[in-house]
Image (tube, rainbow, N blue to C red; front, top):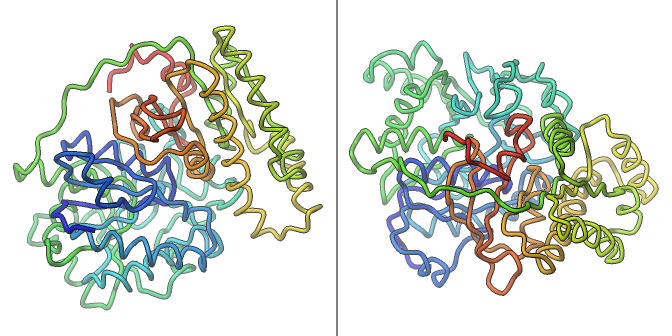
Length: 466
């Protein structure tokens, strides 16, 4: 791959989180395209003026050994781009465990490839309702909403996540279960100091042998200061490898804007109301559940997938065809449709799915990884059939763990931001040569994103003030 002086390359551990990073780079004025695998020279040549690239991976739903195999190869491809920064983008609620989506394993592999002086860890993202104070992560219930803020281990959704439940809010302790590398902290009081003292605080952490340094953050200006500190350690010939939420993109974007390197985008294309939208949801989040309920009460139709049957038949084509036919019927009647695998963790289908997996002899770990693959692939296949048989122009993919598989089943190769809708989930243009989804408007949202009107907003964003 031809080496190009990109400002940044990021690797997202799922599709929804990757579009989150895409949004905040694009809004900062950095020309960015998100690919679903490390791009070839031919793919890069199709986009003029690129300053950053992203890769939407699937490591959030992988066990550590599989992560290591994938990331070693993909990080090497990103290193070949010659970007000043390479960011491993994780969910702003730090979804991970020693068995699935291990952020510690990603750090270990990243350091083997990049050998950075240290690994900055920045998870705070105030615009998304994510705050880090004295090493502890706090999260609002519903990104882009007015929900209450909880310490992560007491968050009603994240503490009950079906795959990676949050049981520790101190990110240093959480990460210590996944890597033996020492993690230090530059806390909020130190970040509030002037630049010289802030640099001295970081230097102290490095002198104490910390290979990873976590940065607190409460306000946007805190991120910008951290961005300046990170940029000091990066150059075209010496890539800085970092880990964190889209707060990394906000931090660097804010710093580069202050330095006059980029100009923020203030005007986006007006997004018109769609005649109907198709939503495919693999999210078990109570936030998404509330959004589904509100949409159904407002006239959306639903296609509820029997996931136990899907597991028993291993995603048989007959089932896919059946669900797709129902969705096509509703859309031809002029209705927006939500195809879903779950409505909250208390959905009776969750228990039935566990029994179906057990009947196939799956271990708990295999259940976790197979859930994302099987459900995401089925949702993508259903959407592909619906898009092929209707004139729907706007698609929503909901659910962090399943979104990566759904996108690949649709044949999506890359996406580019068109306009903001809700922070963390922009409207994008899909590139998928020869596929039904090619050139369609696609919105990809994580389980925690949005208020209860989310799907209504995507249908008609006229009142959106982003």
